[in-house]
Length: 239
Image 1 (spheres, rainbow, N blue to C red):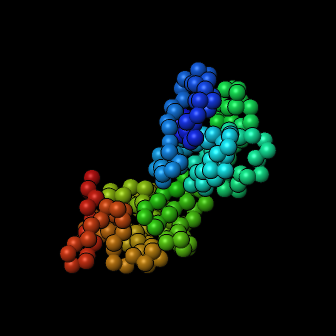
Image 2: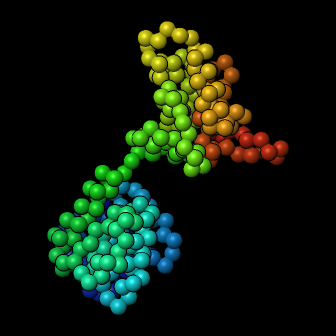
Image 3: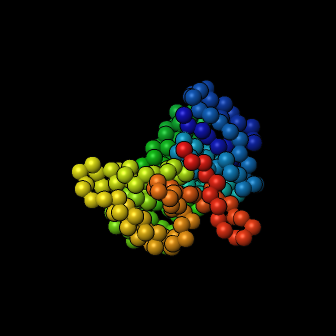
């Protein structure tokens, strides 16, 4: 189900367009947003589209809003006049223009296009604080710096980061990453974890935590608190 975030639809003619759209497609969820605030509702969820009214004397402001929202990663459908096309920054992100705003079918088609393009462009990411794992490209970055990992190290990190707080036994890690037909011992897991920690500058075990005599778990940055002596303490529950 698609959610529309409305910007600038506080004039009667614009509201009439929305009324027509509601009659055309009752499956839409429509929410009024406020472009004068840093609206957190304009997130990068795949089922959200920002619908921006860019017609009339106040046009420069809504066009700037449309460009800004697109930069955040939210797909935008801007209802505009053809002589204002050059003011839109199509390099900023996913922006669709609708000129025939009297047609609910045309507007709905533009919304569908924006959603489809957003789905194609989106890339699965695992994000924990400054740590980013791009699942499609196998790229890992920490504080905007690329981290070069071997394939096994990458798979190990992805396993941990996808399950924050969960304790993985060494035998389980060995089966998941190396496979059932691997004849080496669990010492291999320890060696790879140590190498991974060194590349993540995590030698103090702040992110990949050792559970003595059991295995390892990933503690996301937001799941840790700082004690009075400055040491990090895990607060994530252990399954």
